[in-house]
Length: 136
Image 1 (tube, rainbow, N blue to C red):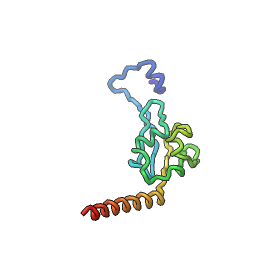
Image 2 (image 1 turned 90 degrees about the vertical axis):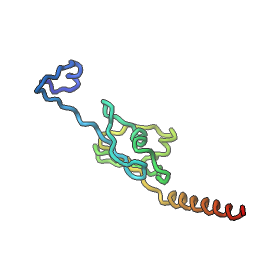
Image 3 (image 1 turned 30 degrees about the vertical axis):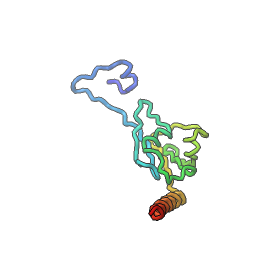
Image 4 (image 1 turned 180 degrees about the vertical axis):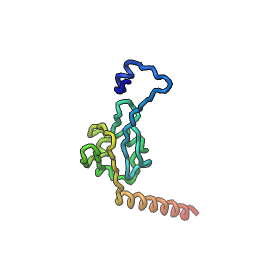
């Protein structure tokens, strides 16, 4: 029996009744924090590669209240943590890069943006209501 999966694919090994087929587990990256769909995302290609922006896209993108400049990449392989500017990567100012299986992309929540957005919504709502009253 051949234990090398790549060689087995190259050799186009036939599978017969009673054979055991072993399938490698797909790598998973995690996108957590202030994103639209936080969770674990399987690396779907054969090389188990996914870029940071692909992972973010799978998570539905960052929420409006995300603190993009303080995003953290936590690497399971070497137990490291790096702060990255997700906004600069999205704008093309910094290059996108590959994530590895087990990596965690954490996008923090910005209390200041939340306050500004909720205050703006309240001001716009109040302005709309005020213009209705003045129309009479």
